[in-house]
Image (cartoon, rainbow, N blue to C red):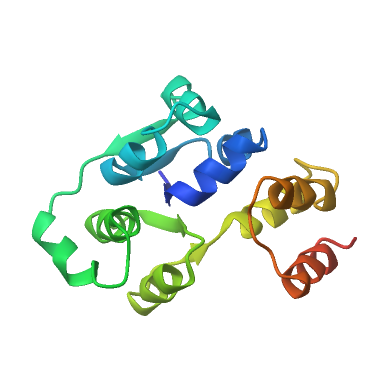
Length: 161
């Protein structure tokens, strides 16, 4: 069974624009560490409601190695740290979904496969789950997700738009 471990930003962004289902459609189920669950559910917003109402395919996991958190916390948030620890504790972890650049670089250094929210959008387009990436990118931007023009254009180009 594949293990897809997700950080808070992709959950929040996809929930806020009504596309959290892409994670389920692409992967069937996902895993989030307790710190990510706590971060996403601390506010009574769409992300909180979506995460709590989709408990059948979103699994919350507690990390085993609490002391390992100290190694990473100088540059990373608790959720990002727990995502990487959870991946290291689960040899079947196939993919981490993280948007923070420092966290992505750390995960890659650790030999973990990483993508971000934009990678999920591209994968959804390639698998014909969405027709176009541009409207979703525009929704993300309107909701406050920062995308440079260069990245925006690159994603559209990769999607053949």
